[in-house]
Length: 430
Image (cartoon, rainbow, N blue to C red; front, side, top):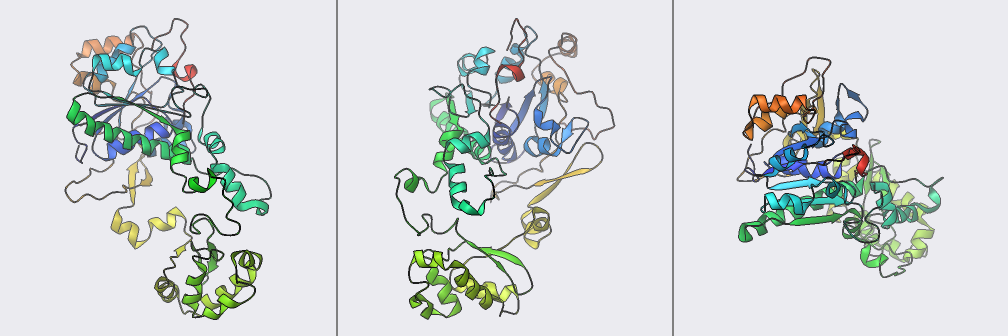
């Protein structure tokens, strides 16, 4: 492994998105990550398209992690988690609050074995309080925290029916905020010698990332003036060659409307009675848009139009698919896309890394692992003999996916009397 987090060991007991993304980010930065998966596997393995225990969704969040599969319903199996954590630096989980305490795998239990352990829990509403036990998925948390309300308010009558956002913002932001918390705890441990517990609530994350929070919490009515510098009130256009693009600068906002006038060299429009105020510009939006659109079509190409807009501090972005972006010169320069083996003879196209370091070189992302693929390797590395590992398999503590087709080999680098599984005991905060 290489990267700024080289030497850190992460035990990842999370599934689907928020927790796996946190652990994947740590892996991308050079940490060794061991994913612990139950016999009934991470449900993201079955996201379409999938084949023989692997999916692109699973690969995207878990590439480069080693994988062990432990059945916590088998008496004594949780001791294997303790063994994994004896020399671990970080433990990641995103079950419903209290689930891992039910299995005796809460922070208090694990930290007694390893006081240096940093343990992060991602849940919908935190580990305590009146909402701790609620089911939580990104769309529901987004609905509870004003995110969905802002979306519906923004589109208003333009929506033929209410629709949620298509992306899981609460999961992604929570995973990244969990990563930030972990790195802060690693820094603190350097001075105290002790780990600590980090409680990340998706709901609190969505409040923290909302750039409108200062307005929404105050209940301020800004009238026709956009509250956030026009970032959510941009306009769509057609370029000289038929390109579709947008500008984030609002035509309505009194802060950004003058930029368009300067770009067009049409400052007299500021005194046009149709456009004199934000309210009037909103009322006469189509007429204003048509004036600017007609001007844009006078340019010979997008490059010259972009230069004119740039002069007036108006950014623009062509509307591309991710596949189209992957074919650009910028994507090639940045390494924005990686081709990762899908373990069936083909490849997945996955996103690259968002960072470049002057003093560190990041390894390629590696391969996505099958469930239990590294059982023997990981526990042998912890000092277990082949006979001991075989005994764990026979006892049903260690399990693995039975592959039905040839695959590319991977690179080498809580108990309950009524048999409640980790999947049944608590809903994950995906």
